[in-house]
Image (cartoon, rainbow, N blue to C red; front, top):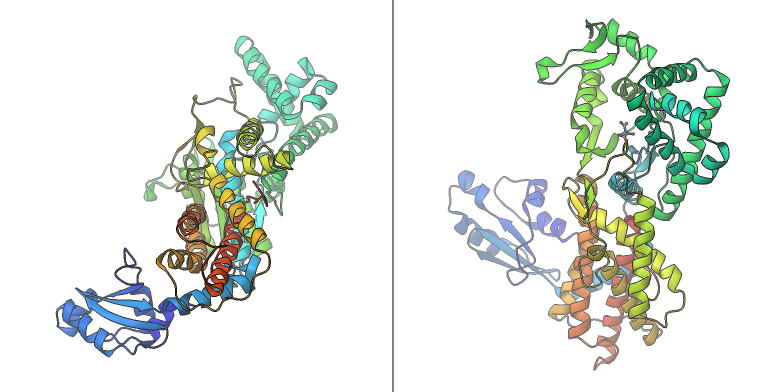
Length: 561
Ligand code: ARG
């Protein structure tokens, strides 16, 4: 139940509408003060009274009932108290009936949201730098779906550009089919690195690469076949990682998909008088918006990354009629997105306002950075495997008797990688640390998973329990109830702000609340039957909600740990 709504519907505050009142109602900093608070400061001017006086009046007039049992004026606030028994009953009934759907809604019904994420580059390593876009995008995808939207996951593959000419040249000179088939993406990358080393000694290799690239463009069968093969190998390798991380896409339309869709865009730009020539290139001048020009065609007539993105946005609007189109891409590309969003706006696309660059910070490992060209790369696959191995060590130590240790280690290890990337506000740069993400006592997914396993074990020992008849709620129980009740609002906020970290923090917070309750209150040995049932129901609701929260991030929960 939405208590804010309940309060707002009954509260009279000067000229304010129910919606205005609703949006003003906030959570007091601690539960001692009340469960909800309404600030009266904004009313002082129109009502010509001191906020404290207004609060007294509102509190006196408020019709308390079986739900809101108290309205008290404190300073310029009216603090409301909700009946705890009612709150607990309401919440538990909801969680325990909705179960794996708890937290979901249909607020997004009928709205399609395109989410461009992960967007890997063909024949380039899938490294730790791709972790955030992959797991952030995937979490946003799952979250949108859970809240009733129709998400379209798009992997805007980097499958166009001169690097493919380099690869063909390198493959023809030093490659072998067998080696590449065997080594996959890493072998391809080794070729790429070798090309750069050799081209430093012999710059004519660059001309050869350009010629091969031109051959792909001219649809020379051999070059196209090689390119398709590189693509296939890459997708096979990244597919393994997507499977491990539970990441899915609905469309794999990459940059090359737009090869034949740019001409009309260029024509439209020309027709609208937006294209100007500059040093042989065709550009859109953005100086009025304090931005460098957006280059549409190079002097040799070739299109650019931005040209493809403009064509892609138009294509997506026509194909999906999106409500929003999100681009989960590192903040290094801020300018690129501002530029092409602006170009679309100048073209008169009123929907340009619905394009959102969901920017995020960098991930690095504790031991330094990396460079694709020189071959110093930290492969995401290696990071995941190392996390799984380390998780296996911790589990072997903690619970050597555990049956399916390998599977549990996999769930815990993968979860640690995802959670490690999602726990902070997305825009922050993060340093990935194995010890930190696998700390069972820290703010980690394994802490949350462990809490679920603890709840499972309590419930297993208890066996079936009767529906609780709640007559009182102690503070520890109440802290759990309140957090449980908060889940739908947290999901709503996480979506509005594109911040899956709200869900990650929520999970840790709920797990902490539960653990405090678990240590302070006896569940299985509760003195009264009614209390025992209530506590078991709470335990059940916690495990369900934690599982739902982690699930939205793409993280599983082992039954036992
Ligand atoms: N492949 C690009 C890169 O690795 C990211 C593409 C993001 N999506 C887009 N529509 N520009 O930098």
